[in-house]
Length: 384
Image 1 (tube, rainbow, N blue to C red):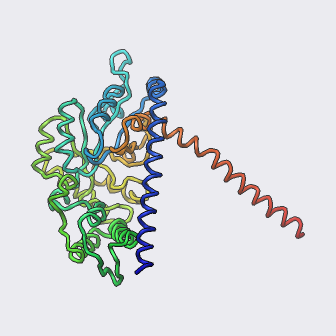
Image 2: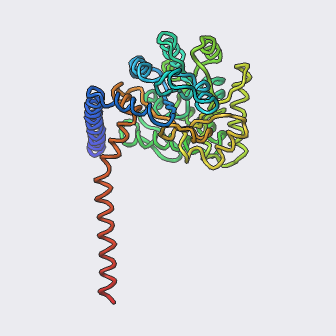
Image 3: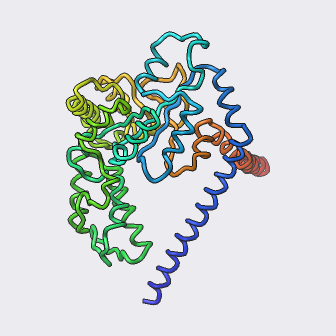
C-alpha cells in the first residue's frame, strides 16, 4: 500500500513538472514572437513575400472555441486577403494573372476547419458573419448521422467521465486512481482506434470500450466537442460565409486501412453523402490526419477516383503554382496559440527560427558521427 502511494505521488509530480516546463516554453515563445511582430519583422516579411512568386496559404484549425479565434481573424484579415477555398484555388490555378495594379496585393489565405465540431456552428459562424471572413469546414457524414463523439476524443472523454477505481480490460487490471495506470489504459485505447485496420474493427472495439467502462457514445456535457447536425450545416451554408468540403465517411486514417477497396469507398461515399445533403457538387477534400503515412499509398488515388478537383494535406507548407492540386499544403494552427505566435507561424518566421535553432545540434551530431567513423577507420588501419 505504501509503495502504491509513492508511485501515485511520483506520477503526479511528473505530470506537474511537465506542465510547468510546457507553460515556461509557451511564455518564451510568445515573448519571442512578440519581438518579431513589434520590431516590424513579420510585416516586412509579409511585404517581401508579396513581391515573390504567387503563393497561397491555407490555415488548418479544428475547433472554434478554446482560444481566441476572434483575435486570430482580426490579425489575418488585416494582413492577408482571406477568400473561400474554391474561389482561392480557382484564382490561383485556373484564372489568368491579373495586373498587379488591379488586384489586392496581399497574399491570399484560406481558413479551413476539419471535422465539423458543434462550436464551428455556435461560435465560428457568428464570427464569420460579424467579421465578414469566409470559412471552409470539412465534414464527416458518418459522425453527423450518428452524433457520436469523434474517435480521437475517446481517451479524453474516458479520462473525464469514468470514475471507476479499477477496471479489467483485455485480461489486464488497471487501477484508475493511479495516474500511470490510468494513462496506460488511455494510451492503449487511443492506439487501438488510431491504427485500426478497418472502420468496422474500430467501431466494434469502441462499443466494447463503452460497455466495459459504462459510458455512452456521447454525453450532453461534451456537446461543444460533438459533430454538427445536418440542420446546422444547412444554416451555415445559407449564411453565405461557410462552405464545405469532404473528409471521408467515417474518418479512418486511409494509410492504415488493410483493403484498398475500403480506402476508395470511404472517400467516394463521403463525397456522395455530402453532395446529397447539400444539393450541389463538392470538389474539395481533406485527408484524415493528412500526413504522408496517414494518407498512405492509395489515398491520392482514392481522391482522384472520387472526382475531387483539390485535396488538402496537413503537410506543413505554402502552396505555389507547381504544387500538386491533390497534395495541397496547410499551416497547422492551434487555437490556443497566442495571436502573436499564430502571426509568426503564418509568416514562416517562427518555423525558420526553430529550424535555425536546430542547426548547432545537427552539426554536433554530424561531427560526432564523423569522429566515430574516423575512429573505426583508424582502428581498421591499425589492425592491419
